[in-house]
Length: 359
Ligand code: V47
Image 1 (tube, rainbow, N blue to C red):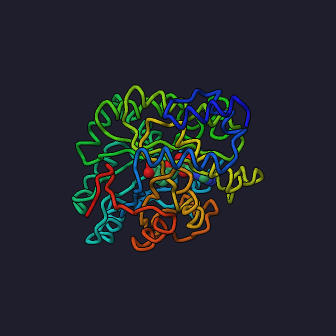
Image 2 (cartoon, helix red, strand yellow):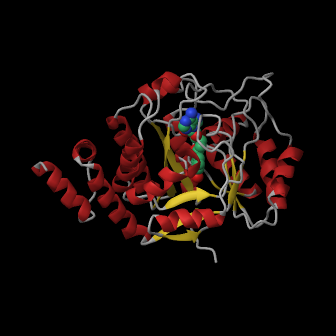
């Protein structure tokens, strides 16, 4: 081990924050086992022997989208036989199908529809909440929010307050992709910008609405871009403190315009998870989203700093099955989630959206 790596490892072990340049050395020089050891140690400092899961389902109201991201396998153009655009009644039916099952979270995310406006989404949330009053609505990526709120002529603050009054209590982490402006322009040229993404999350945090954050990795970016992405999040969190969880999202290459890139290896996934845990010393939870990794890698992810595996899902999301994930109809029972966590040597704890323990 080089003296420089030794010094960085000592810093991580004594819970000292590492700088971007040090993260690069750690990423390139540390063997995988060492990253795992450091990340698991950092995870245990925050959440001990617990690994969280929840009972959730998704509503994806449409796959029509004004944006056309190169990595997206989900969007369809208007008129395509594979396009959908649920009416509010259809959204209500989906919510009703999940009533009485102990669900604590409804995750609503979809394409950025060209015509529906803010008031349509306010009504959607109201109707979902009326059917599932005990569940938390975690809704809309910052990109969807920015688009619908601006289109309504409101400030982000006003728009978020309106949505909150309808029942939106948390915001998911999607739409972050890669913050580096040059790369963002290459993989999603017409999508809402990095500045917009941060503007929405910062405003939510100021209003006391917790949010998540993501990165889309494993495409054309380098390790430097990944660290830059983590660094921007760490700085934001220092200022506003409202991120609950960070979710590294592995680029899946089926059925989109970047397919020739291929996919990164599982060891790369584990390095990404471990580095996220080590670098983001101020974001409490690192989520291994099982729908994206598949179940076997999710178990492995728990040895690399993740303390959350997301939820039961109940075959309600298509974003990853359309992009080539193993599970074409993703669903897990709570027993199966508990088994995966126990197999990794941790204790499964059911949580709500705010990481309050249930039961
Ligand atoms: O922003 C789209 C990603 C995200 C592909 O907050 C792709 O709890 C890989 O953000 N390959 C949406 N990824 C999903 C998301 C999410 C998921 C689970 C939990 C939470 C949370 C948030 O999906 C998009 C984009 O980064 N994505 N296409 C693809 N081909």
